[in-house]
Image (tube, rainbow, N blue to C red; front, side, top):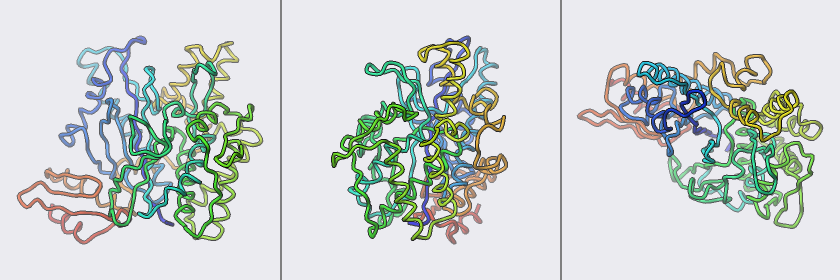
Length: 455
């Protein structure tokens, strides 16, 4: 599949505190946050004018699912737009709480764990061919996903009985329990196999990857999704012979690789064939194979750029990982933490260090440490502020999302009652007119035009 639909679902952590003390439960905070959302659509589960979905997930976590994107730049813009949409809800809810006499501030974090040890995710969705071969996933995709944390991890201070307090690559490392499973919460897998294509089920599947961290870095979002799409293209091409990199114990390998951010310990993971390799060596092997594949196939320009950036990152990781503080979340966070520790003589277990770990993910543009670094020009960006602002109200124009976004916008302008999901557009009137959009790659449809013109 040369052209691929990709989407991201990101859960956020929310809290309301005053002088370090929690004043409202997460449920109460989320209900206040979504008052405006309920006013928009009489529900806490709505589709927006930009084609995206906004809703409250299990555990009262605000969740934003991007519209369908077939271009990595659109995907990054949509992802950042979601963060700004939610931050707008925070501003509104903060004002309401003050008017009601509540003292304190709302904090919204784009991370993956809370103080109670709960984990919430950033799920990646890739449209794949219906006849995908799970065995090829185990040989090639699982090893890629397990080891890509060396560039995609968000970084986290972690305490374990065996290692004590240490800086790890991935926030999800301690919360993933299986390689491939239909579960999502009870036993979190790397790949979720629940068959919900949100498209023509005879043609497509939706590969649901739930192992990844939530990334603040636009660069990481671009590279991790672009490279995963390329790996999938290789897997789908049955004429391509894949190197069997099946891991002996994928979950153990995931956790071990997370413990060696700078590669100083030389931790190696064991393959099913008995061979041992570092995470960087596995990534280098896969990258080389993808480069060979891309040289023989038609690959989109954005994915070629992701491939180029991937190779550059692996080169820097091999020579000096700290060069990547302007691109990778875990390196930027690590440098902030080490700067504080050196200045104040702190242990990794110090609460001030934990605060830095958390504030890196604060979505507030003035308070969040990622945003403060970005404002100073210290981080590589992939899209402009203008592109993000446009993505707040405008859907990607080359996928099915264009029609959904236009329908939602016009129906709201005309004050019409409607129902929308990923594949249906419905007017809740006497005629109950409904358009079924089973092809996510199709951005126009005569039936849609007639429905829109009838509003």
